[in-house]
Figure (cartoon, rainbow, N blue to C red):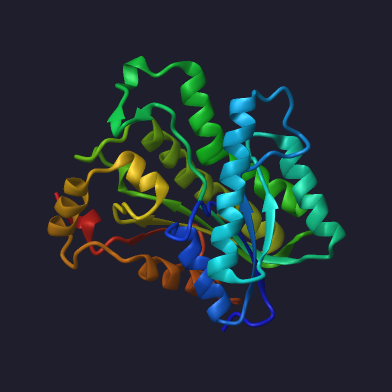
Amino acid sequence: MLSKTTFLITGIADKHSLAMYVAKEIIKQGGKVVCTGLGVSAHHENLSEKAKTFLTKNYQDFKQAVSEELGDASVEILDVTLDENIESFAKNLSDKNIKLNGFLHAIAMDKTIRNKEVKPLLEVTKAEFCDTMDVSAYSFIRLSHYLLKYNVLQTGASICALSYIAAAKVTFHPYRNISIAKAALERITIELADELGRSHNIRVNTIRFSPYMGSKAGNATLNEEDVQISNKMSPLGNAKPMDLAHEITHLFRPDLSITGEIRHVDGGYHITG
């Protein structure tokens, strides 16, 4: 189904990351993947030793997970907070003559959630708000921009991003600041679908997934009780990571006329009151 295709996969932190399931399914269907992780790049300046240690360890864990789960898949450092890093990453792919048939945006960050406790919105600083928006939403635009600038992202490509129901509704599990960024991501999806569809025949969609604790992000923000409640509320129970992987690889199929959608892979969680 995806033979002779190559996709960029962002957001892999470990073997349990949702993005990892997507990458494995792409390979299973005959495609190739380029995976990115957070690490020390040539564009990081004045890093503290603590920051260097964290980024180095993060990238080592990322590479090990990719190697164990995906074999010899290509890996690259990508920090979406640095425009210089995004541009050099895109240029590097171009220099290697790598052509992408699409990419998965699975990147998010919110420093207002600590030890599963969420800072009230009225106490969120401008820096915290903008940092979350930059990583979780605006990076979708900048990554698309540079991949197109260097002719890496091909005409007719398919782009997908990950979101969740808190972008539209106040949920019982703890989200405030990041929910606003995800709402922005979903609006960006619609605008890019129109803009890129007309200019490059590129499709853009976002998928809202069930509460999921398997990833580092889920473990940092959710409690087991949150997952159990959503599982009970959802008519079909919580969706599984492979449900998401199947949906994204379906949207990655060439020649589909599906774009500008906010889709739900959540067992029906979004229809409950």
